[in-house]
Length: 199
Image 1 (cartoon, rainbow, N blue to C red):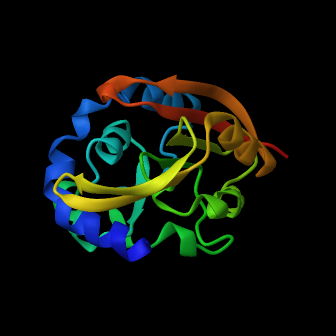
Image 2: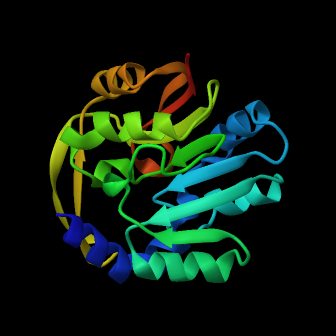
Image 3: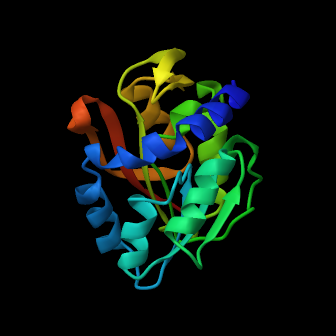
């Protein structure tokens, strides 16, 4: 399934990137930005082409490190936002303590990894952050796992729990939830969670 996701985003990269503004992420990013210290470093898991999320963060004066499973998305990110660290990397293969950052974000990406791995993924993200470090993520609003044949002209795969289970996963990984909201922009439903690492 990981190969399907990688190949799907490689194929759909430019089409997907050009349609990203259908989702109104700005109000959530503003909430995160208001909680971060000036010059904070943010890790973006599933960064795609770097636009609009990483561009927003950099324009606010933050440092960004982006990872994505798609080689073509990373190529686009490097073109869109030069002088920023972007790496081809599968988030499900991250190691504890692999990064040291002030916050982590992940938009429309975690649900492309097997839901059985989400608990462990958030524990790893926790290990990247100091006490009080922040996460802002989108997850599934309802439980579903399956494949779509035409995602911007490519096959794609999703795997996610519902909102309550997702909230439980994040709290069990050592986070205190600040914001927990179902967003319906772009004609879709996604769970947005902003949370802080607890001691």
